[in-house]
Amino acid sequence: MIMSFSKGSVRSGNRAAKDLIADHGGRVTRTRVAVIEALQIAPAPMSHEDLGAALAADDIPHDRVTLYRALDWLVEQGIARRIAGSDRAWRFEVVRPDSHRHAHFHCDRCGRVICLESLQPSSAVSLPDGYQLDRAELVLHGACATCGDGPGSDNDPGQH
Image (cartoon, rainbow, N blue to C red; front, side):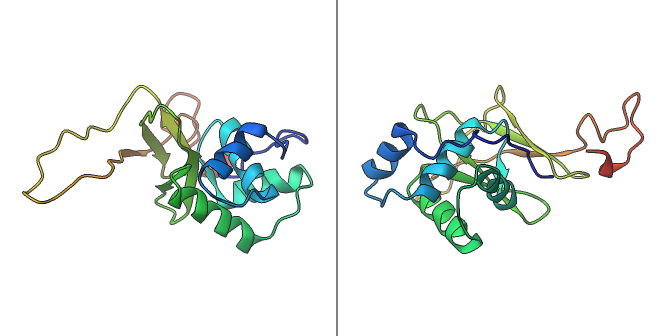
């Protein structure tokens, strides 16, 4: 599923995005800035393909390799995080300054991933001595409202 963006939705000039990159010691590039902006306005985590489409819709020149490198750097710096999908495609979301963590729901039929803001992964686990928890992820799998067996559904995953 590819998210659609209207022209002008990724501005590629946001001072906050530029400052965020500079504060992490990185080179401020149009691709990094545009990716941060796209992730900030996205209603759900975005795949590489979604991000490429958003940049293309705004006539922001980029190539696949540069986009992968930008995403890798943003994740390494803790500016963005990866979310694994059962379709083997990573999705990305911007890390909020307040370190808010939340769970995600992955529709196994259409591939949609949505944020479950009110459900937070618990990091209250008992680990063996010497182990240290860096992060906890919670991804729930099933069928979204469109794909599910609810009233009015025809169970056709191609209906998105």
